[in-house]
Length: 398
Image (cartoon, rainbow, N blue to C red; front, side, top):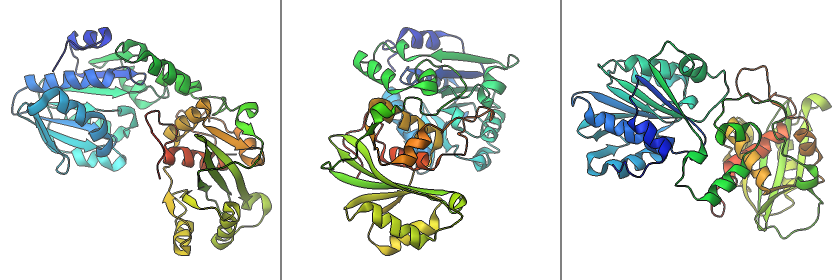
């Protein structure tokens, strides 16, 4: 492990005394993951050889992507793992790997005794999992190292752990400007790509409430364009499905690196007093595609019957949408801010919803008000599933 290649902030953390609970929070790309993994590996290597340890992620896939490769580079031959068995070895100590995807996850760690644990993006875990994990740190001197981007200030991690003065806990805050190894152009661009609550959390590293309009950066003068012929390179359809609630469909095309909402279909059974069948909605799907060769139809994953119908018809390739709400909103905000989304002026329902889609400020968690959100949902499905706002992306997913 090369401790010389650290920023000043990382070096401060690396050389400071540890507590039982060690939290590193702050902005994206601030260096907190790298240095926390380094210190965790150092801690494991100095612990009794008969102690067992754990590394956790929201999922095993996320854990592999965010942590495993970095640990392999740091520790070299002293770290081996097999993700299929969810076990590995670090400096001769057994390491268990676990995902914390839902409330059932805490059952997977019952009964184990740990000398230490590492949690990547701990704010994404269910509270039951974290409570159980803390109870497993039973070996003398056991410690937790955890990273997170800031969230709602009433999030249980902030309110019950970080702000609890009775705990043996250290809280380290990092911001992107701490990471002096980053390319200044990247830092400048990533700061421009976030806005509103996501800028405050992911750039400034603050625990703030999401309030007001969800997409305040949406500007009709910028994002709404005339409906006119363009030589689109590919086409997609995104669908939020409803029976009583509205069904919203958007036809998307890419032209010169910009994704245009070409046209849309919107029907509310509650407002019209008429519910449409899946077959009737399928007719509308065919109508808005206008005979174009559609790369994918991205559909609300809860719409099982409609997805089955589309597949049975055989004309369109259908895909379940990624329904990650907060991540999807963040990526959609970045896409709007960067200018890679445009809306044809014939798409009146999505334009109307942009002006009405708001955060639920009374919820105590990040949650949109469930009104005027159907075109917003199909937009989010498209952006998140296609990953069009991911900065490192080259080309687009086919």
